[in-house]
Length: 108
Image (tube, rainbow, N blue to C red; front, side, top):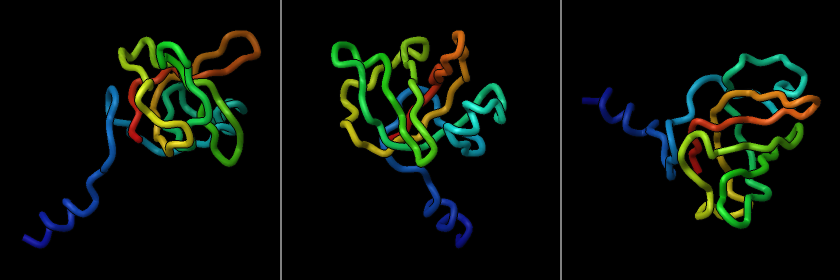
């Protein structure tokens, strides 16, 4: 019985969009340096989002800022308030010198 209570105490809370973010946390600096796997989990603050459809947002952590695209995952962040703490998982995408994240899931 004690085990069940202990497990329940560590349950993730918040609102989930897409698939639950999983895996070890990385920094935006590590992603930009190429020191991470192809799929990563990042945490930070939602700074700015697409004002029309909510199909992208900028995530900032203590090491930098990165654009996160949510279109391919099939969800939008229209209802996520600016300055919300979010955790996001996704695939690192390079377009020339620009690096972004194609989200698979967000928790806020």
